[in-house]
Amino acid sequence: MSIRVVDAAPLVAVALTEPAAEMVANQMRRWGEDGHEIHAPTLLQYEITNSLVRAVADGRLVRGSLATKWAALERVPISYHPLDSDALRTAEIALLLRRRSAYDAAYIALAERLGAELWTLDGPLFRNASTLGLPVRMFP
Image 1 (cartoon, one colour):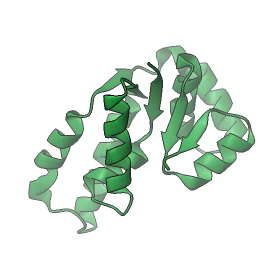
Image 2 (cartoon, one colour; image 1 turned 135 degrees about the vertical axis):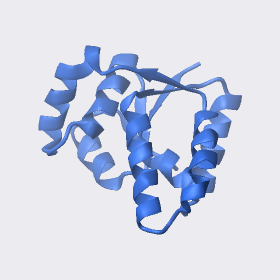
Image 3 (cartoon, one colour; image 1 turned 90 degrees about the horizontal axis):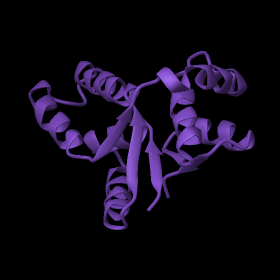
């Protein structure tokens, strides 16, 4: 059994039925079948909520479907972790990535601590982090 850390991008893609949605859903389903655990910082829930709110505001998602979308996302078996034990490492990684926020770094710090890889759909994050030797993978 191994651990996968996911950021918000893949789950938002599924929730909004973006082009990568089917591929992400299939990959995550295979992880479950193979006994892999999915983990994320609690930040994930806020980022997904923010993305869904933006989608409603932009007219890409009907407000009445928020509850259904959120309920589907809650069925994904994710173990959530508070930031507290990874705060300093998160700041260090954010500075390495030259980002103006520590959001992406929080996922990488958790992946490091768990001996796992962060799986994302964020191309720039993947390129920047992998260049630095950080544990990041793109969804296939």
